[in-house]
Length: 156
Image (tube, rainbow, N blue to C red; front, top):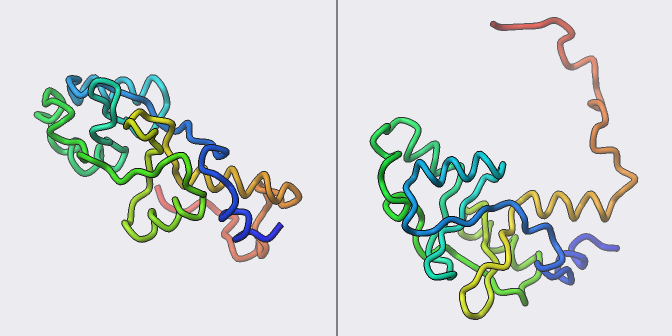
């Protein structure tokens, strides 16, 4: 199958949309970080009455929380990205990739018409798709030119 044709045909709902957790808009940043850590997810979709109102990502943790100890007790609504860019279930993988490239984002929540969350499209969704489409390509192969890499340890 041609890769571009496959991405244009593949519905986002057929992709892995599981890289997220949901948190309530009333949660503190500390509670959201705990939830992200416990569920091993990189993204928290913030819900209010079951509808998506914001997103909080690992990048937000680095940019807004890491050097600000006071941020932990703030409400998540203070630090989340409100009204994130979303797509409907009818979108294709190519649509999602186009939005990600155009908006310079790494997450596109997929939502129902009523605003309830279906999942979260990420670059990992695409990598999983590629791994399925090209099963003969070893993903854990060695470099093509192994002699270009040092055999000695460097640094501390």
